[in-house]
Length: 199
Image (cartoon, rainbow, N blue to C red):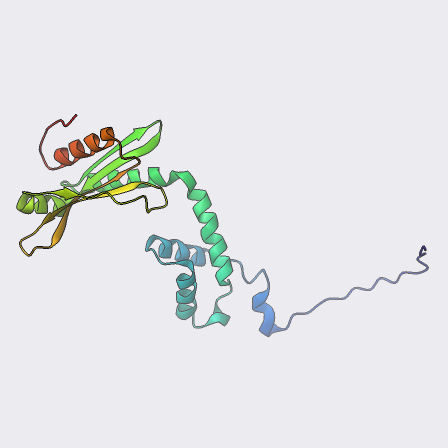
C-alpha cells in the first residue's frame, strides 16, 4: 500500500498561552543572577535545595512570583557541585590559610601526598585556651568514614570544670596508618607550643 500526496496547504498556527499559564514556560523558569546567588548563599549555610526554594517563594510572596521551580534549583545545585568537583580540598586549604593570616593564634597544618590532601589539623584560639586550662588529660576518638570524602574525623577533647567535653583540636585523616597518627600528634603539639617527635 502506498500513498501519494495530491495537495498540501500550509497554514501557520500560533499557539497563544494564557497569561495565567505563562509561568510554566521555559523562558520564565530560567534562573536569574539573584536566584543563583540565593542558592549559593543557602548552600554555604547548609540549607538544602528544597528549603531554599520554599524560602525564596516565601520571601517573594508566593509561587506565582517565583519563576524557577524546585527542580530548576536542584539542577543548578547539581551543576554547581560538578563545577567545584575535586577542587573542594584546595578550597578548604585556601580558606584555612586565609584564617591563619587574619587570626594570629589560629593554627592550621595540612599534608598532601601526590597532590592529594592526606591530612589536616586545625585549632583556633578558643581551642588553645581550653587546652591550657583543661589539657591535663586529652582524648581523641576517630569517627568512621561518615563524610562524603571518606576521611576520618578526629576531634581532640578534654573535660572542663563542669565535666563537659571541650574541643582542643580537630583533624581529618585519609587513612588510619601509624604515620598519619604520628603526623597528627606532632601537628597537635606544634599548635599548642610543644615540640616533640613521636615517630
